[in-house]
Length: 213
Image 1 (cartoon, rainbow, N blue to C red):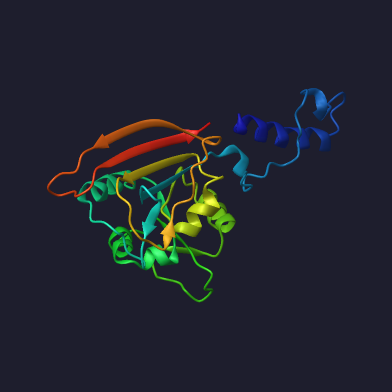
Image 2 (cartoon, helix red, strand yellow):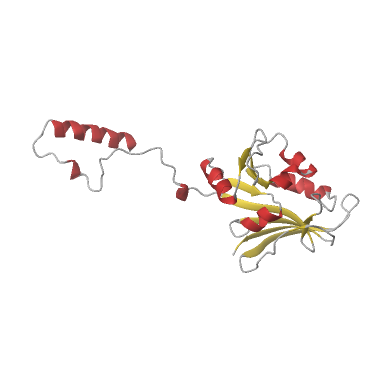
């Protein structure tokens, strides 16, 4: 189709220059003979799925002094599986934790959000706001964006996400970072996998998926 239109446009220009009687370029209804702009990016035609992935205690704690308050190998394996595909969006504090250094090592599909203008780790993308991060991801044509926190990033993206994947660790603990409340008016639980505590995982836990209502 593109080849036809380009051929038509060239032929139209030649016939008009030759002043062929009766020729009018408007004879094809709805066709605009103006040159096409193939370099324009239209984010309105591109869907990027945004998934928040987090683990939280029963009292919504997700961290304490930049560390996880529990050691749950089952959750770590589950988390690793969920982030195999797609880009990873994270804040600087989460990126710099011991767990974060393991997650993000040797990955270049990482978008880091920081307010610090001169902070620029090599090999990843660095931006300074949520809108800037989403705009970059769209320009990169990211189909799956996994949002990994921390607390402030979760709070700023809850109303923008398409899916939540939450590990509920069934215990209460002290902490200084919390997951925002999940509003039942915006989110519905669509799947749940409950697991008992075992020799390696000291607390019962659940993997829970939420979709937009």
